[in-house]
Length: 364
Image (cartoon, rainbow, N blue to C red; front, top):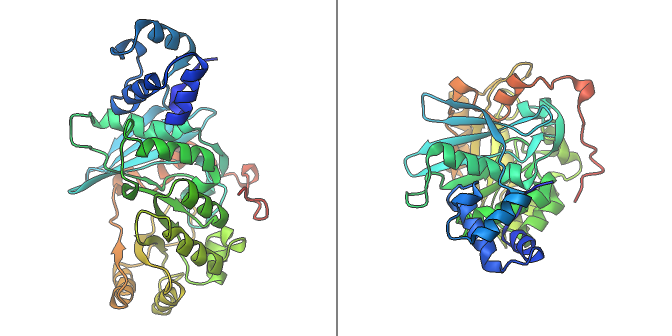
């Protein structure tokens, strides 16, 4: 069985090469060829001895998930659908802006957390993605976007906010993060790589210890009663514990704030009273808010808050001195909200076939 070199970070690749009698600098060379130059053909790695190239051809591959669909929105948003085998597809979305290019990638095929407003959650959960399948989304997107080491970086920011809960796939997620940060691979700043979590508190602590990057927390409610309904993991890790974990994380984080993501649901979590309640909840945590207009999907019971209601909610937060942004709706014409395209391609909505999370057995 051939070994996929996309599964290795620098330490893993060095160990792999040592096992086969090769010096550490060879691992660094191959790492650069794979990730900086997007090369999968060992024969093209011209500064590597021919004998090593032949050895690699016999025992290894560089294999990223294949692109099933590549859709370009009128606003420049580009959405990739990747085949990860077993009838599963995952998504990555590239969002170009004047001062940055952000790639949003997935870490699981589906999601087990079952947040009530999430299209991905309604498709059920199949499995964790491998390192190769996570970093392979970045690898493939770089190729598709025409990135090269001699150009200004097209993808300047990566956010793990696609399908799945990154911290429920901790080991593979962290290995992929280390590749993103490695100067011999993608060389991204810790400030420009963001992990989003629904609030797996013990694993947030692990991330802070092992690979601190920017942190976003899917909050979506200002009190436990409502969050228990919207984000069921809150039943295991309630808001008091989550806020404390955010405060601990900031002691390790490359940024001096946590971003709280807050999806705006009409008549559910968008009242003036709830905005003030949100301020009270987060008053001891250095934070900013990112308000997200809800993206409807078939079968959802929710509606997007009106633009005036979103503006008023944001005004209350801003007037209290908290940095607040409202996410632009991008890629509506290509279903660029997380999970929408995969939901069209693969029907996983049968509830009896879904794996639901056991709130008492979250792996930490």
